[in-house]
Image (cartoon, rainbow, N blue to C red; front, side, top):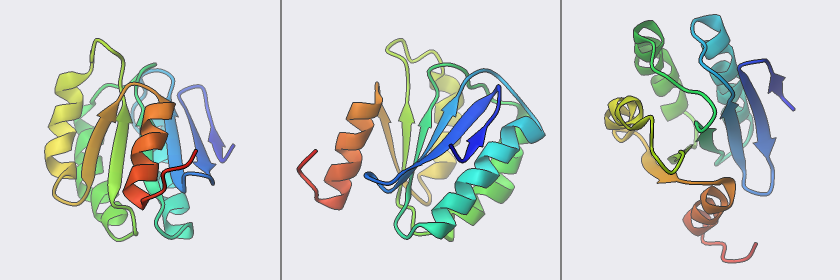
Length: 134
């Protein structure tokens, strides 16, 4: 575990060369930004590292944090080798509006993909790398 809090866990998945940000419940301010700063550090440290956010347990937009994502996180992430942002969503896509609001800006720098579980995210990332085995 690279970062662990009551709001979010951030880990590096070596087999996928991806940072996994698992949101647990709504948070804002430093509680929201610290995990993303950790994710940036991982993306900088691992060449070609992709970004996966599991939003099924808790994720909402806070206007100040959304502005921070656009003004700080995205420009910093765009300076890494990251090429894809993957969102793991629930089957009801309860966060559709929130995620679509961010996806417009994200698509300026990254391929954006939605899926329903970590296995599906892993398959997408392996396909992105041209790896067909598990």
